[in-house]
Length: 425
Image (tube, rainbow, N blue to C red; front, side, top):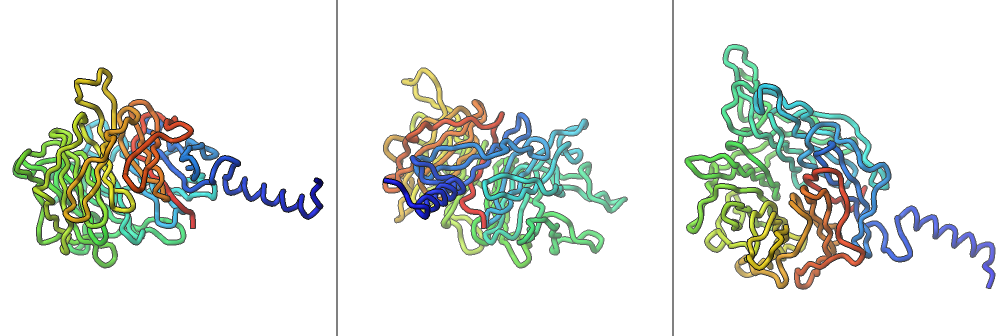
């Protein structure tokens, strides 16, 4: 049967729309854009996430330059129009913490309709050796975490690296709603010679931070009185960070002494830490003053056969906790592999209950994990083999399975973290 002229126009119009939306005959369209940092060549790999299969296809123009050296963290501004990439930089000749790292920067990108990143401009945090970044719940303020805070030179009245006290620092920026551009926010609570300090100090050698509601928590790998700690802040008016009356929270347990905390993450009033040395998880409930209350004794053993947990995530429903593990310990396995542990979070007492089938195999040396915006898939960035692993998530049981069209995708060299945007508004 021949189509009428109107029918042919209609078919052509549908085909054009399908191409524009990324649809295919066997796919469900693009539900998100993923960006994966690569440290080998200072690049950002970009992918479209397919709704139907979870398959990843490369964004036009990918990979993109990170516009700095050693990208370690990226943050997507709410609405998905802007992305911030945190470049740690490489140590100056005198060593890390003695000055601004070479290539240390905060690179701002605008996001095109097909997920393409366009570099806008760079900014520099006030501290040295950038480690991580978070935005507040409103997507207005960007908090950049540095390993070393500046110190005040009494004679010159200037802040510099030579006078650092070994603690870390957070630099705060307000992000323009229309352009994404950053403006420094100074610390009105701490002044030197009548001038606001341009940063907030945290504990020694911080590695990661997590924004939850009106709170910001930073985990410190350095020890205070022989124990690692968490620095809690409440987020006040104008993005000001207010140190809570609880002070630094000492990470403690009746069964193990934490000596190698590798990450902090959380959601829906819960915070979890991964401890690589003891292969355990520390769980906390948040309190009204940004304090933390230990859950069920504070410690949960990781799933048997796993080792070296490095990162965790709670899914968007708040029902499941997924933990990345660098390796295995089972004597029944001759070839070590990296994996994901999976737990059901009891709504009654927040106890962690292992999920059937876990741990699940992923690429070698996982660094970060992210969930797609439709709660169908999770993905890990794997440093050792330069890949991204995708898994289908059973929303009813929390079980993970391989994607229907293959679960391994090539990223850019030495991946660090990844993030997924669900929309561009």
